Length: 121
Image 1 (cartoon, rainbow, N blue to C red):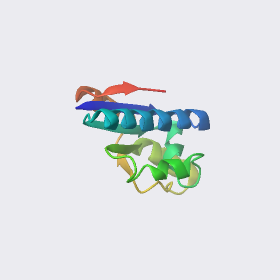
Image 2: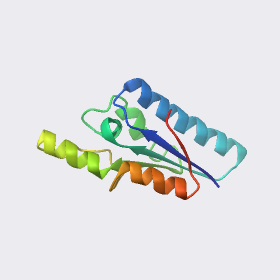
Image 3: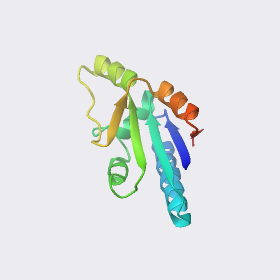
């Protein structure tokens, strides 16, 4: 089983595009070889905008991953959500496929402990 964790912590359209490109290309390569895989994209700090329905510069593309790219999951940092909620006065709305985890950095550490390769494009 190939396991890949991809970190996004910047609110930069270019970085977010790279994250989605790496995700799609890795999934495509694993599928072409018939290899089992799991890919998890973990967003925290300003990278949480990747999953926000009101501010994501790549919303259509990231939302399109659901159902079209199997074995890819999205994790959103609960600490970042709490900070944004406090600052903005309302909780940010995220894409439906984003699962909230307590802390993005801790999630990456857990994934590394589970044998995931962690990268930051």
